[in-house]
Length: 134
Image 1 (cartoon, one colour):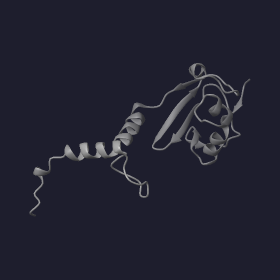
Image 2 (cartoon, helix red, strand yellow; image 1 turned 135 degrees about the vertical axis):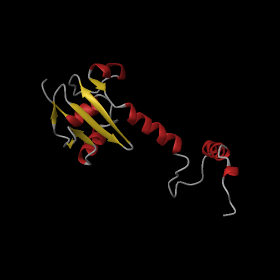
Image 3 (cartoon, one colour; image 1 turned 180 degrees about the vertical axis):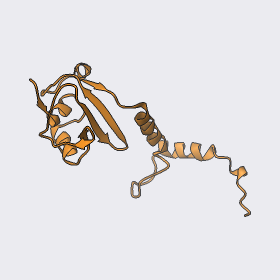
Image 4 (tube, one colour; image 1 turned 90 degrees about the vertical axis):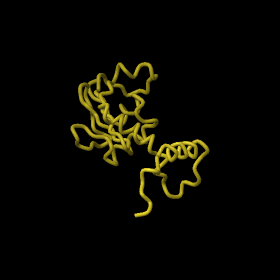
């Protein structure tokens, strides 16, 4: 096997849960090779680097081997190498931490955990350093 469709490979190595979702990501321009968006029918070869954008992070994977059948999670490291930069993971962590502060409109009331996190965050701010009279 020299070449495999990119949507099949993304599904086979468990980056996406279904092949349909992998195809849609390609069609929306979220899957790139050499910073160029690719179609789901694009064939890939071993050694290529694939960028997958799952906002807010862009993951990078190096193709080690090709597969067109879904595999167990333990076999995935034989087929791909995650070369995502640490800065991207920091961005993901930052987004998780700040998620409860920047709530989307219409998502309803905060959950009990979100409320506690919000109270803890607000409690850590020292309001005495602000001059409210000005």
